[in-house]
Image (cartoon, rainbow, N blue to C red; front, top):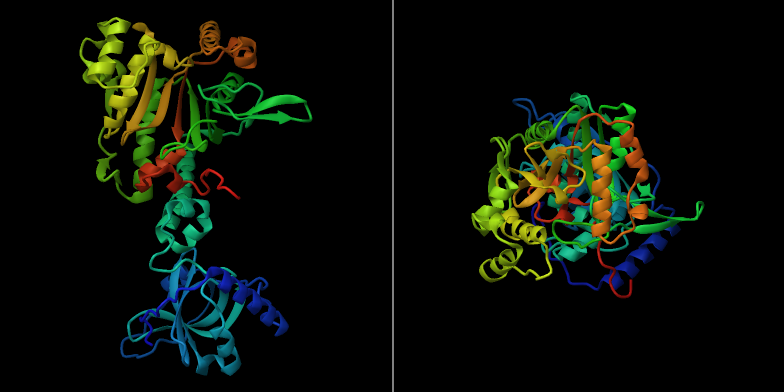
Length: 503
């Protein structure tokens, strides 16, 4: 069998293979071989090995010996005679191995024949190029580092069940190089995001995940109990209030890349545990944040992908073009009619139900009807980057009112590819107005203000917070945008999954 031929993969019972490999472990141990070996130091990454290869000089048929030492997972074996070709993969890439009986000797070659696909091995060898032109390592010595007891999914069909891929992310990473590439890119995006903000003079901070009063967003929290203090606590839903206290304390440019937890639904855009960034700049405004986030996203796209064009949702979006700005009211009028905001609530309800075919309820308020129009008929249509500005005050109780219309707040919501990427606003720093709005919000939601309003935050504001611009951004959605991923689960290492019966 030649180096590029692929053997037939027999259909086997997984449990039988498991039993066979467990038996192999016993055989190896009896023979004095450690099936779960020791450290294998001084290995070189496969990508570096490829880069370091020096091809034969002109007139030479063979290059000078180039020793190398690599380790990784065996992904394929071809041939079972006196020579075996294999594929070895580490986190940087894949390379072909050649095991020859004449190179290894009878005993070592016989031992290598027993190595299974999925095993992790360490190899000492020399580089050469096969007749087919493929860079290959000629094995001089091989060491078993970790025996794989379970067979990998069959190569060509792979791990195609999406639920299995999310539940067993480790298998998804082994079998799907595309998944690995997305998850690696996430790490690079986070690194470049920190670099960008460091260049802009922002300081990274950390604030508590456990809070006695969850604040900073309208969301249902996860509840827990602190035994040492004998008090109920909540996993944070946002970092906003803590970060603003730091502005009161004198920090002027702060950010936190945080984990937030919201006890709500899951879909392709939402995971109950998610990563976000929030940042605040003293003496800034909503416009400051719009300028920053537009430049940030554009810069990250260039640093990560080398282009401002991203391919998402089956279409190309150019992040290099100036982001559009549109007011909330204008967008709603475009979807529901130019006279929408002049209609009485009853007429809004009738139009939403009968003409716009929305699922609405007669008990809904004027604002609830309007926001349903926005969410169901506007948001999904905002494909090109769009700053939606001047939202109703009730939707964002922590934002400063617009100077020309106190019913609106100086806010933006950045929409790209039909989903919100980042909200930001001119922060409300009037403690009296802030107290009134938080109290009103608690009353509307039926909560006891004493339990729903963070008095320590209000006390901090009463000492004085400078005029401030603030913004948040979902890191998971940012990664989706820059990688073209269709689902938030594709960019999270271990997305939340429903437990199967029997687990």
